[in-house]
Image 1 (spheres, one colour):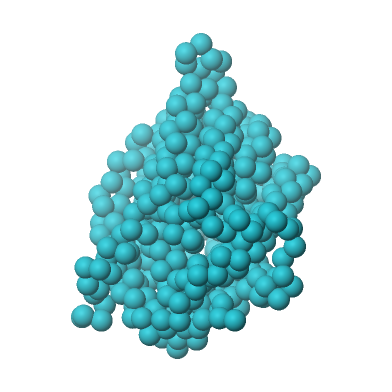
Image 2 (cartoon, one colour):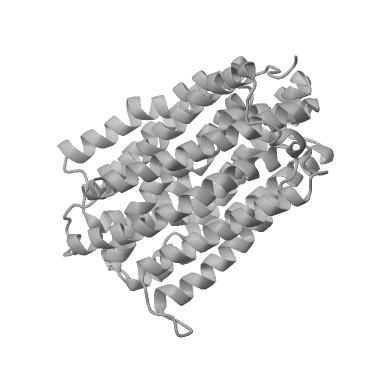
Length: 459
């Protein structure tokens, strides 16, 4: 068992990286839960409209994350090897990637937003207003487009800060943003303190303002602390990126970008398949996803910690130590998420009662949350394998393991079950989860082979 358990020094380093990321993610997702509950108080149709747009924006968020990942792998390893110029070059590449993604998705949403929204709206067993749901979604999306540029810029800066050892500042900025978002949601959704009651449009305005505040805090702090952020010294002396580095970023980053695009669109497609069972299922999946995302913070934050800690060890040339610590990190992630799953099971029947919706929606949501709770250790293991492979620059293998697997097996399962059977949502959801987590064995095999154990930045 000792090879799966670290010493005190190991856990001190882990918690120094993990806790700021975890706190930021928990606070962000807890406020998202409160936001969701607030919108849910307005009615089921507004909540469904916001949930549909959330699925579309989720694809954008993951694309930015994936687009920056290739440069981020090299940033962490450049930091581990003490190469400041390399950090500056990868940061500059991130700015190009972030703004290209932002402009691309704004164009897509402006030209085809309504068409995408309509794919999620289907009649179900309860008499819900489909036209009203469509209008709420359109109103929400029109305002949420304005938060895309600051989100992309903030991601470029915050990811670089984390990869170069500064994890507290992004956490503080995120906390400030979610507090602002929560207060403005209360004021603008319900019309408090003399403001008009704007419903879903108020929720969107609050989010846009919070995004700009978060972005401003991160960018201003970074530029006011040039000593701590040494990569800034060379970041803007030129807009050129060395051709050799650009090729390496493209070779690693393009598969990761495509992976995140395909994976997030796969999640959206799965939810579209579930929506074939009616608008009440859209609302129930929204409640379940919002609650689940709060608990997913455990394995997602551990994934980021694995990418940073293992990436820095690989960049420093400590390959055997990277293998040893990765094994301990995976074991800790699975144990942590098993405990988190127990808590999730206990609260599953309670949280849906906070929503102003039908009993049928609450019942379905509670069942879906229980299924996710039982899946938590499997989520933790596959996510840890993903970030391990990514830390070593195994972009193609990561792509095959993640999104290619999803589109080859998981999405077709949901598509067939939703279109060609009358299976109710619960057994269909369970079947999809079982197919998804059958890849645990593949993840174990890929990590065990240790093809990811390599130093990518030695000159």
